[in-house]
Length: 261
Image (tube, rainbow, N blue to C red; front, side, top):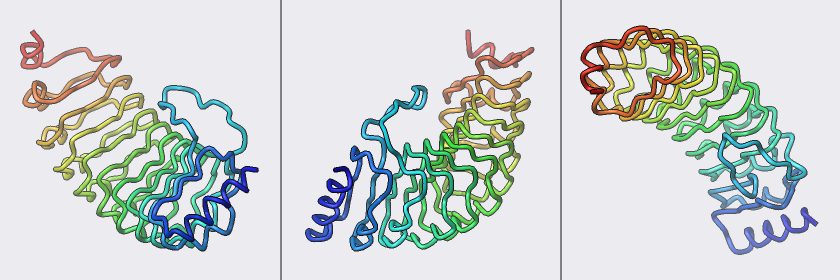
């Protein structure tokens, strides 16, 4: 029944030249290969029927994809691909065929690594891989020069590569709930950055480089191992939303104390 429902939508999409196809709510275990005939598609969505905030547990809803659907790789006009909330373990190297993608959403899966060929997605602006099992951000990410948003929260990442500083268009960097110990100095090169989310990590120090981010509006560093707030933040404290809750801070700069009064 679920495949029949998917086929009806696929046939209509092909016949009526749909630009968007949504197969949500069909309890699919695999995507029919016939989707390959919908080469005009610019958006393909297959996610949990009802989106839930990340702080809530995913409710069981039956079957999910366990493998990235190869047939989707034929849809070379895709700009948006959303496979959120499945059990996909691997992003295929062939993902590079989807060179027109601007948004890749594979959050809440079981992905362990980011493939090297993702660098072929030169038009990508949003990379959403939160709630997976990724351990490393590859240095080659610097080649995705159009990225404006990276969401890699709730993974097992231990290090932010220096190469991230080359993503000059980046405005939002979300890396909460990982195992990161250090913020790289190269973050100062991200002059368009407005939001940094690094709560629930193992960070011990905030680099002075943060003070050079003049467009920053949010800096979330709660639940880390930070013992000192740098003086450089005194110039920004009243202008941005800051969260240092649950850190073993021993001393607050006088200038910040005065701002808090």
